[in-house]
Length: 267
Image (tube, rainbow, N blue to C red):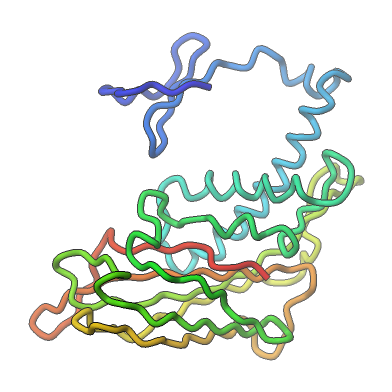
């Protein structure tokens, strides 16, 4: 794989053995694989490739379930590369799992800390809008209720708002995703809690005026299920974000393409 610098034409498609695609950093050039799928499937020398592909497939399944859980309620909070970036991090998670290569457990609860660097909009990290967010959310014993409290913020030093913004709000969310394991009979990765229905919920704080010198803490609670504990093999992924608003004749209008959101914790 290679990258074209200063590509004015934004190439996409295929020329001969080269394929061109775009990501947020520019143009990617890849050469077509010269090893056939049949050889990868049967050649003993391709054992490592088969094992890697199997784990990548399991990671992609888990990433898709988590992505759908979050975006079902907030369709506009991720960038166009959301899916690929999340899958990439989930593939790193599976490499830390227990078991033989190609069959390692995708233990999101145990190793999901890798996801905490995930930004919903890669070009707009949360820290560009609000700094000082370090404390993670607190889960109850059943992990079906979660609470997050924002830090005390210095408006001038820790909040970077668009010029036209007059208010901002915190956005707090949580979603569940099952751990995955390799199933020998099916020769694929399957969720360890297939009967547990994924949960996803968001809440927003009340609008907070940016004219304040000091922003006092705000506490935001969430309930993922009604009295039903989250199974041990299901991870709870919490996220925190911020959005900005403008006061127009007494009405607060949310500004588009402003603010950010990132994974806060996995438990």
